[in-house]
Length: 99
Image 1: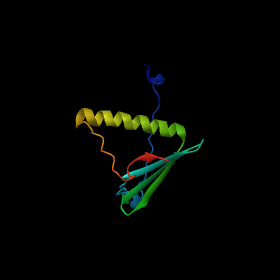
Image 2: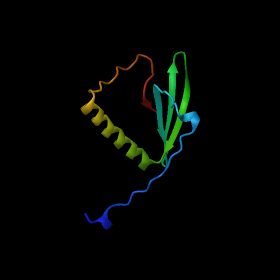
Image 3: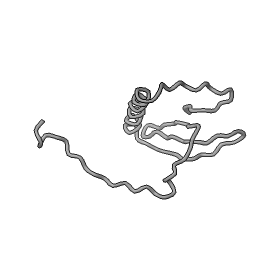
Image 4: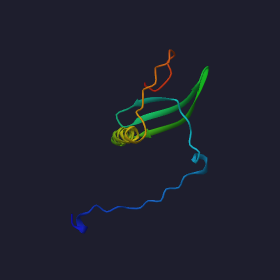
């Protein structure tokens, strides 16, 4: 591929706000959608209650890219580290599910 035919890359500097630096933990997610967007509501559930730790809203096309990126990274993880065994479903309605 000639130099002029290569896709150009743009460097974008990203600022991480201090309050997000440590991240948040979620052991549950509710996924819902409309025609225009997917809504991911992440929760930390410790019975008898839970708390929303974050909510992410994405377009359908970005959501599909996210799903592909997750699949690719799971493959890399299992190739380089270990096979991931699915967790058994708890008796209560907890865990990752769709709305």
